Length: 363
Ligand code: COI
Image (cartoon, rainbow, N blue to C red; front, top):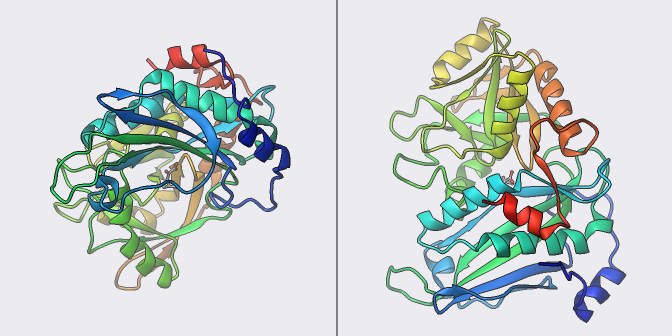
């Protein structure tokens, strides 16, 4: 499979006229091209790069009515790499496939997923921003297209790959507020898959916490409302007694690719990693008694973002004494690998332009 990214005159023309805006922000600027493949009559059809634009969707489609959709967040880097490079794409493909299957959708084949990434990233290569923390943020998206008011799965689906040249999600340390009322996910639900409904259910609490002067809700488990799970779009980590503590994957937490990468990097730095049940009461005690010195959020979009303050529904607030000693070391090591300034001992980076190699990485 040889990528032919710019063989469509309209795609070529759009890229010829394109210029990166400044500043970028996160997810605000959308690449002028996208990739689309369709599933019909029980099989995936060949996909192609097309101009970015609105997609014609029947308002009675299952993606609109029932949230039959899932997505991924992943990144391509150029920075010190000689060529555009993807970070752990096989992890995103595996999670995307799991999310699709959970919502009764056929995941795109690895050939289509690889071709989409390879074609789009190669075509857009000269616009991938290169400052540290910047990247081409990629959004593989899968939508159920059939119109039906009855609760049943679509038989037609659309796979899109969208892209956004972006900065990190947050530029500064964030403040989080413990969410005591709503739940993000319950056992047996879709909390460990990346489906839109998880995010839709978080929006009201997010709005509430922004109004109260915070950035993100900190979600607790649905059954007891006492154990920390994650933030709305990021995993959660704490430095306690110089160890890295994070909620264990319980089936209701998104298994973040960045979370996993940080755990492996921390272990390589001889930082003890503790994945465990994390009662919020215990964490607050550890902040008061000084054992917990740092909190941070991590995710593809956020990279690693220190948390400077944690608040509660009753108005109580606690500032963290150290907003980044361990976090900044982990962030620098992760970014050095992602951006090609350091050796990649894990083999996480893969060149985007070699579609066949990329495809074989996907499984
Ligand atoms: C990501 O980190 O890629 C996410 O998808 C989280 C959020 C921006 C939705």
